[in-house]
Length: 154
Image (cartoon, rainbow, N blue to C red; front, side, top):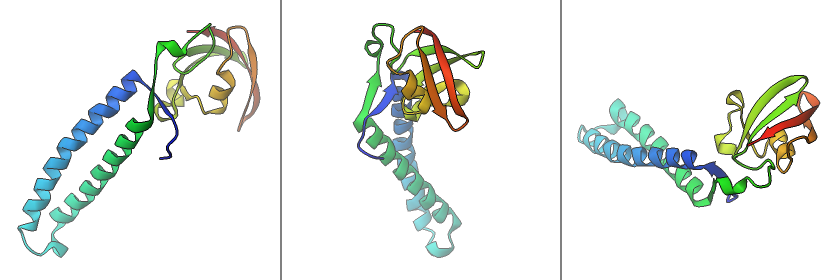
C-alpha cells in the first residue's frame, strides 16, 4: 500500500479496528498452536504445524496491512459536505440514460458498486465530486461516455 491518503467512513474505520483486535487475539491463539505442534517433533510431516504457519503468515500480513491503512486513514465526516456540492460521504441521486440511480461517494477501500458505493477515484466519482444539484457531467467509462444529471445531493 502506498503512503497516500485513504478516505474512510467512521463506520469503516470502526470495522477495521474491530478486525485488527480480532486478528491480534487470533495471533495469540495461533502462536500457542504452533508451539504445541513443535512439541510433536518432525515438523516436515506435521500437517497441523504447516497449516498453523500458513494461517500465521496470513494473519501477520493482514495486521500489517490494517496498521498501514490506519496510519494514512482520513475519516470522512459531515464537514466534508458543503454548499450542496458532491464530496466524499455524499449520497448523490442522478439520472443517466433515463434511469434514476443513487450513489454514495466513498474512499476506494469501501467502494462496492453493486451496493451503490462508488470510489471517489472511479470515473463516475471523479466526475461527480464538486458538482451540485442540476449539473450535468459527462463520464467516460469502459462502456463509453454517458451524461449524468444530478438530481439530489445529501
